[in-house]
Image (cartoon, rainbow, N blue to C red; front, side, top):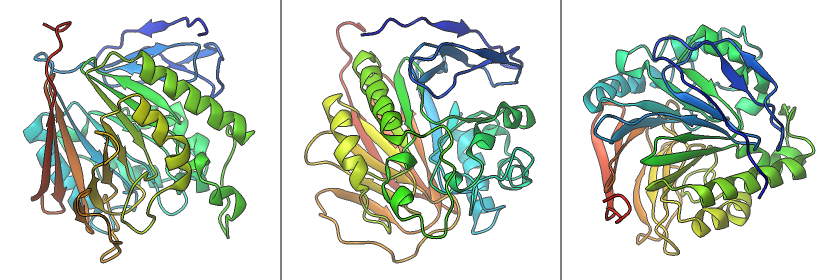
Length: 353
């Protein structure tokens, strides 16, 4: 195992003097510090590919968050209504942060850091006080149709401090570790059959090496994790009955790593629905939160009812509440009604006692 040097910055809740930025190359050391404003977490940088952020849980050790995906449509297709209910539920649950599962800006990502879509689809929409927490964002396939570097740029964080988007990274809360994976480069058809779309593969090529590094770093991070709960977030589905269905490449390359490392939840977007599928092969649960705006009514395939716990072909979002002994997941529709609940418990280990 290669040695790792770590750099820690303690960021105040109001202002951070600097945010380290890593180039997306495995084994690359820290190159620069870029001034920016963040929302009160600790950034830990290592020589490995995956940048790590320490985000403290509540004083009692619990954690609450919201998950939304496939949303960026300037408020259209009920995006504004979903945002309103997110704000209400965010206040009720006293959330710590928000996760976006990608496809942040339709139809073709951002065309630069000065693209008005950033304000019109993000800052202007998610205005509730409870949503002014840190947003951890992954990229979706639609984001790759624009200027990817724009979404990754610290310029956007200076424009709206709650925004944070990287390709693959880790958020550690001690009680739970969230590992965010850049799934779009895994999908063959975007390279072999792009149709009329142009994808921004800057920072990805050579693709084989990029994917190998992502999988290696993810596997290592999961093996080294001592968190009670392990949660992996990506844009693309692994298992889904929605329009896109299963992502073959992730089933072959990513799923075995998640199962081998006892990951509890895989959270994704991509299919414009809300969905919960269990696994007959492991305790791993597959949760889709892709209802942030436009949804696909009636577009659902048959799935084994023993595994299909919930499917909703409309707009909405998801909440996750975590303690040392329990995870509670809830799905909400565009009116804030609870559509589905699921819980899992774990015993407190002797090491914790």
